[in-house]
Length: 126
Image (cartoon, helix red, strand yellow):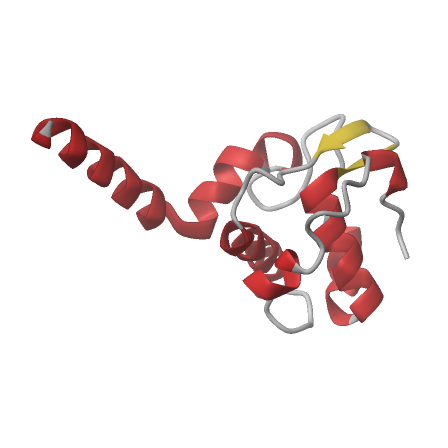
C-alpha cells in the first residue's frame, strides 16, 4: 500500500513539475505544435493573439478550451475534464508563446464559464 501511495505521489509530482509546458505538450501540441505554429491540417494559433486583449476575446478562448470549437480543419475537442487552474495555465502558456498582450488568465475566469454545456458549433469567434 505504501509503495502504491508513493508511486501515485511521485506521478503527481512529475505532472506538476512539467507545468503548463508539459500540459501543452500532452493536450495541445499534437495539433497546434510546440510553438503554436500548427501541424497540418490543424491551424497555427498566431491569429488568436488579439483575443487575449479584449473581454470578448478572452471569453471566446475560455469557451473554446472548455467546450471545443468547430472550424475549417475540423473539430477541436473541449477539455472540460481539466481543472480550472490547468486550463488557465494552458491559456497563459499560449499567451506567452504568442507574446500576446493581456492579463494572465485565472482559474476563476475559467470557472465562470463552466456549466454552460455548449457544443463546439455554438462557440463562435467574437
